[in-house]
Length: 605
Image 1 (cartoon, one colour):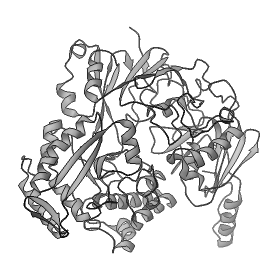
Image 2 (cartoon, rainbow, N blue to C red):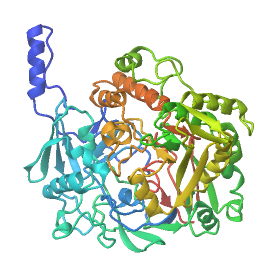
Image 3 (cartoon, helix red, strand yellow):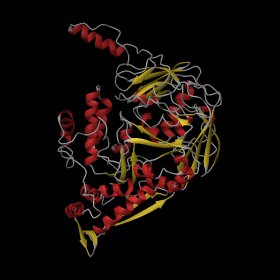
Image 4 (cartoon, helix red, strand yellow):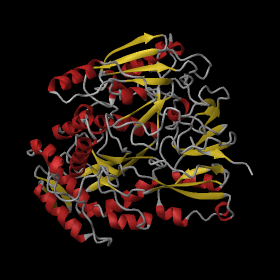
């Protein structure tokens, strides 16, 4: 990020001198930082391009969640928290733009300094930065937050702490973080670490997860009241310190945000139709087309909005736990994919309106190319030839059925693959050579009616193969505990992926995360090749090498047959009260964090 402070000469000696000078020269404070290149917005930008700087303040918006909650501390491992809360009540040193792959601008920090190699980062706090109780944000708060979250916080925050060699104050409002490994993304990750108030936790156990101990944040919203299992009501802080900051201008416009809780999506949808909720996201294209014709929608009180995006598909489907037999055998996982009659299931549930996810980064420039791997991708995969599964280098596409209910060709292919893996039908039951029956459990969260319908159809096909699959539905708390302990054979799966994947990939599929309780590597993936692709992503000095590493990673994940993919949404579908408005200009990430409700507003008649 630092500008070059000298002119290169054409002689070898001058070139070497310049290189040495660049490594030793101090960095220059800037207003933002991009993973590659430079920030798109100038230092004097007025507002984010997808925010309306003149948006009115006021009104309320009411969301619906399924399940419940038993904690309002989103920074510890214990408890179930409304997933939106950490985005609305807490802030970090830098804030992300949803219209760039990965660019941060100053939030609690007014500037950021990094050397050319990004071996350290220095932040200077804004003098006006305040917690919700009006007290100033100090360097001591920042250092305490990094250490506490890194050693006692939720697992999502712990990875960074092990990569910090030193964190120290360099002035009354500045601090420097020095890293112990080469990783261009670490400076940006540090900029996104939430900052909490140290004094609040003196004499208290930060990890206890006591419901009444709500961390004090710096965000625009605070908890006004709540009732366990029923609702959480948030109000906009009238003294919010950053309301006129360019990064925040035209955002955080609602006076009240409320989250109502329901047992399942069916009840939640009925509550929306009855006017108890003012906004809802719809993931089913068929339902969007055919079930939003209730009176409030017909008379115009409810509006249907579609929000396009340019982000990767991510992965949605059913994940298989490779820590357990029989899913530790890739041939069995391939058979499960062959038996999954996607075309018929998709037609039954979505009317065939939503295309299937083809790979983890499909729909973006980071997706694996069709056919054999070429050039840089092939070179990255070559050292791991002995461990690669079929299709990783030669090319791979998901099995496709003829769309009929019976899927005979798919089941025949599945039978052949199962035989190769040592499974044979005896007396109507699929068994291995040791006589063990092929039985497994599918763990689902109560209220997940969509995946339950998928499983109802899928199980009928599995029975024809001689398998016994049992679906077990549990409440939120049990589901979280079971998944955290990897206590499942198969469960539903969702990973949102960005246009600038980075260190979070270690949490999703890195070998070190495979056996860490509470981790996000649900499939139990341990692969030197995957680890190497992630390392390459994080150390690449240019976008071409970075893109090749992601494409290679996409091949490894897809051909690993860890997840049975279902459909993707090419647009975000949001139905809402007609008074709820959003800008005409839409960010490249579409309806993701930073868009709803951040840049929406209430427009009175």
